[in-house]
Image (tube, rainbow, N blue to C red; front, side, top):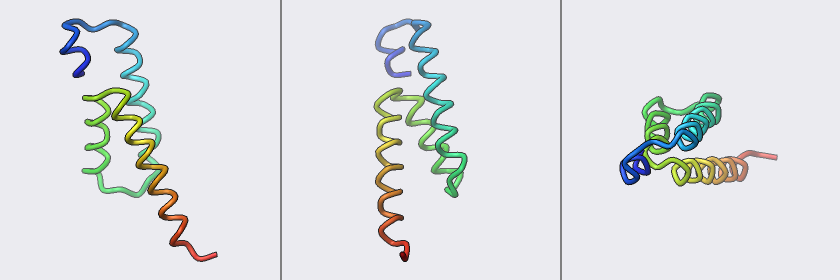
Length: 74
């Protein structure tokens, strides 16, 4: 959304990409046992920042998965 505010209009391709990233965010978070507030926070971050927010989500998922893997017994 910040991109749309800066540009002053909404190019169709960016709108389609934003919808796609919001869908991917939902797919990534629906299987995780997280507090709903955390899921909404990530959704809003992706909604507002578009690609950088989604990249931050993917990095957070990768790091949390790695951290969880370290604590699991073999």
